[in-house]
Length: 292
Image 1 (cartoon, helix red, strand yellow):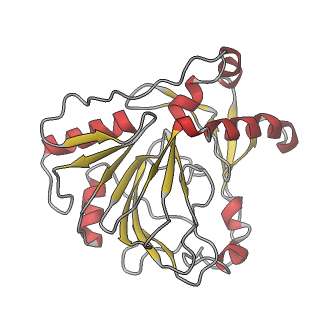
Image 2 (cartoon, one colour; image 1 turned 90 degrees about the horizontal axis):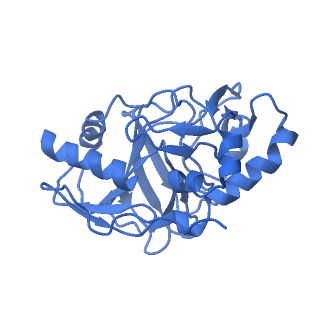
């Protein structure tokens, strides 16, 4: 029998410049006492990074940021990613405009995933800013990939430790016309050649040293050295395991809210339950390193 799922500390320690309030046992915390539109001090920035490492996704309320201010905050953590597949916000190639118009059928992000793992060096994290939200719905769910790994049996962890997986952008690039027909955020036009890269199935976080599962539904297509058919049973088991409710948290957006998630050790899922209303978010993504 597996051990009970461990939970985060309920009493955050070591914060002098910001307030940190966990929102559930698996991951996630709200941060207060900071205006991200300003040039925050190095001490505040260090505590934000500490909170991100401890809680994996952190949330800020009541922020008021211009695109340039959002980019400036993102650059405090690294260089910014220009999404290779989606059209950017006009005039701001580093910002992805995540929008669903009131008459659109589908949103983007409607599968459990980590962002752009098909890149050789996938993103370190993303900073998503809510500019317009519906009166209800449109929540985002997050999952803790450390817990997903740690709650596997010893035998499964041992087997996965030597496996690599192939990640591909074909989920987006090979059906771009079909996806664009029902979504407001558009993929770049024309048929694009699918790109693949290989990453370990179990990743070591470069800052915390913890191990986590590193596969996801849209971009992980098979294990390296195996066919898709051979890989499917184990991948299906892992992807279902990651979505266990006790590994997750759920965030209710308000205009001016920001979610900053660690893309190296979390999944997220955007709910599409606000038909007839408009939702607009701006996302800045920080470049990362090659998983090991």
